[in-house]
Image 1 (spheres, rainbow, N blue to C red):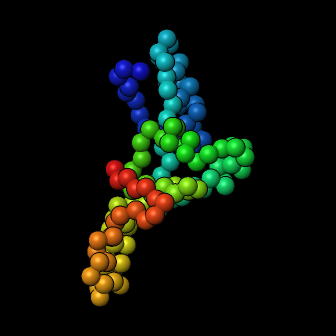
Image 2 (tube, rainbow, N blue to C red):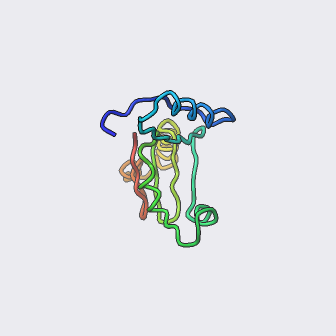
Amino acid sequence: MKNPVGPVLRMGDEVELIIAAIEDDNPGTDIEVIVRVQGDGQITVTQQTLRRYLGADYEIRSFGAIMSAFSGRAITTSDAITWQSVARHKAGEHQAGEEDAGNPRAGEEAGKPQAGEKAMTV
Protein backbone atom coordinates (compact mmCIF):
# COMPACT_ATOMS: atom_id res chain seq x y z
CA MET A 1 0.00 0.00 0.00
CA LYS A 2 1.67 3.22 -1.17
CA ASN A 3 -0.65 5.84 0.32
CA PRO A 4 -2.63 4.33 3.19
CA VAL A 5 -5.63 6.33 4.40
CA GLY A 6 -8.58 5.55 6.64
CA PRO A 7 -10.01 5.74 10.13
CA VAL A 8 -8.74 4.27 13.41
CA LEU A 9 -11.75 2.52 14.94
CA ARG A 10 -12.37 1.58 18.57
CA MET A 11 -13.22 -2.12 18.93
CA GLY A 12 -16.87 -2.70 19.61
CA ASP A 13 -19.96 -4.58 18.53
CA GLU A 14 -20.28 -2.61 15.30
CA VAL A 15 -16.66 -2.51 14.10
CA GLU A 16 -16.85 -5.65 11.92
CA LEU A 17 -20.01 -4.34 10.25
CA ILE A 18 -18.40 -0.94 9.66
CA ILE A 19 -15.40 -2.63 8.03
CA ALA A 20 -17.76 -4.70 5.85
CA ALA A 21 -19.57 -1.51 4.78
CA ILE A 22 -16.26 0.17 3.88
CA GLU A 23 -15.26 -2.90 1.85
CA ASP A 24 -18.65 -2.85 0.03
CA ASP A 25 -18.27 0.86 -0.78
CA ASN A 26 -14.75 0.34 -2.15
CA PRO A 27 -14.84 -2.65 -4.52
CA GLY A 28 -11.46 -3.47 -6.01
CA THR A 29 -9.62 -1.61 -3.24
CA ASP A 30 -7.32 -3.59 -0.96
CA ILE A 31 -8.58 -2.80 2.55
CA GLU A 32 -6.18 -3.46 5.45
CA VAL A 33 -7.49 -3.55 9.03
CA ILE A 34 -5.20 -2.48 11.89
CA VAL A 35 -6.03 -2.96 15.57
CA ARG A 36 -4.82 -0.46 18.17
CA VAL A 37 -4.61 -1.61 21.78
CA GLN A 38 -4.57 1.05 24.50
CA GLY A 39 -4.68 1.10 28.28
CA ASP A 40 -4.49 3.88 30.85
CA GLY A 41 -0.97 4.57 32.13
CA GLN A 42 0.59 1.14 31.69
CA ILE A 43 -0.13 -2.22 30.06
CA THR A 44 1.97 -5.40 29.85
CA VAL A 45 1.92 -8.61 27.82
CA THR A 46 4.02 -11.62 28.78
CA GLN A 47 5.45 -14.42 26.67
CA GLN A 48 3.73 -16.95 28.96
CA THR A 49 0.28 -15.50 28.24
CA LEU A 50 0.99 -15.12 24.52
CA ARG A 51 2.02 -18.79 24.42
CA ARG A 52 -1.22 -19.77 26.12
CA TYR A 53 -3.13 -18.14 23.27
CA LEU A 54 -0.75 -18.65 20.32
CA GLY A 55 1.04 -21.91 21.10
CA ALA A 56 3.99 -23.09 23.18
CA ASP A 57 6.59 -22.13 20.58
CA TYR A 58 5.58 -18.45 20.30
CA GLU A 59 8.50 -16.10 21.01
CA ILE A 60 7.79 -12.62 22.36
CA ARG A 61 10.36 -11.16 19.94
CA SER A 62 7.90 -12.12 17.16
CA PHE A 63 5.48 -9.53 18.56
CA GLY A 64 7.55 -6.72 17.03
CA ALA A 65 6.76 -7.97 13.53
CA ILE A 66 3.05 -7.27 14.00
CA MET A 67 3.41 -4.02 15.96
CA SER A 68 3.56 -1.21 13.39
CA ALA A 69 3.52 1.56 16.01
CA PHE A 70 2.91 2.24 19.67
CA SER A 71 2.45 5.18 21.99
CA GLY A 72 4.31 5.80 25.23
CA ARG A 73 7.52 4.12 26.30
CA ALA A 74 8.01 0.42 25.45
CA ILE A 75 10.11 -1.54 27.91
CA THR A 76 11.08 -4.98 26.62
CA THR A 77 12.63 -7.90 28.45
CA SER A 78 13.21 -11.47 27.31
CA ASP A 79 9.73 -12.46 28.51
CA ALA A 80 7.52 -9.34 28.56
CA ILE A 81 6.72 -6.03 26.91
CA THR A 82 5.36 -3.13 28.99
CA TRP A 83 4.06 0.09 27.49
CA GLN A 84 4.13 2.97 29.94
CA SER A 85 2.96 6.55 29.63
CA VAL A 86 5.81 9.02 29.34
CA ALA A 87 4.32 11.04 32.23
CA ARG A 88 4.22 7.96 34.45
CA HIS A 89 7.82 7.12 33.55
CA LYS A 90 8.96 10.67 34.32
CA ALA A 91 7.14 10.57 37.67
CA GLY A 92 9.02 7.35 38.48
CA GLU A 93 12.32 9.02 37.57
CA HIS A 94 11.49 11.98 39.82
CA GLN A 95 10.57 9.71 42.72
CA ALA A 96 13.75 7.63 42.24
CA GLY A 97 15.76 10.85 42.25
CA GLU A 98 14.29 11.85 45.60
CA GLU A 99 14.94 8.42 47.12
CA ASP A 100 18.57 8.44 45.95
CA ALA A 101 19.34 12.07 46.82
CA GLY A 102 22.40 10.99 48.82
CA ASN A 103 23.81 8.87 45.97
CA PRO A 104 25.99 10.98 43.61
CA ARG A 105 25.46 8.47 40.76
CA ALA A 106 21.68 8.11 41.18
CA GLY A 107 20.74 10.55 38.43
CA GLU A 108 22.98 8.84 35.89
CA GLU A 109 20.76 5.77 35.62
CA ALA A 110 17.36 7.47 35.76
CA GLY A 111 15.38 6.75 32.63
CA LYS A 112 17.92 4.28 31.28
CA PRO A 113 16.94 0.66 30.70
CA GLN A 114 18.19 -1.77 33.32
CA ALA A 115 20.19 -4.90 32.43
CA GLY A 116 18.20 -7.04 30.01
CA GLU A 117 15.76 -4.24 29.07
CA LYS A 118 15.38 -2.11 25.98
CA ALA A 119 13.32 1.06 26.02
CA MET A 120 11.90 3.20 23.24
CA THR A 121 9.73 6.31 23.54
CA VAL A 122 7.31 7.60 20.94
